[in-house]
Length: 128
Image 1 (cartoon, rainbow, N blue to C red):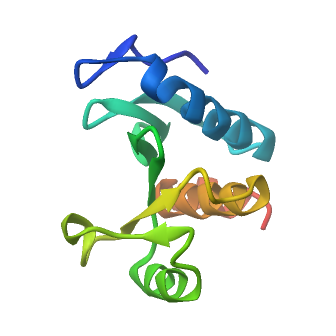
Image 2: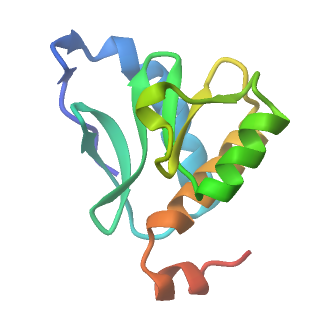
């Protein structure tokens, strides 16, 4: 994977690169195929076949794609990890508190988000 541009929304890259490095490392370790680095809404993002499935919102928050039914369940189950703002209500995306979530749970969310955006055949070929 290549690295995103040096600045995001006019902020120095250091603001986001540390937390994003953790996200990238976990995505790589999970073995998700066809993942590349890019930007989405001016922030570092993980893409599958050119579609964003996870992106930094700020240095403490990751936006992950998530089926609406699963999102509602997770928001209720663990609001210390998962939340949404009015902007995300009704959209298949939720916010993750990076400082609160452990690596195993974050990896699960990244895999689920990847499955939301990966082409059906690619997703079907990736082990459960």
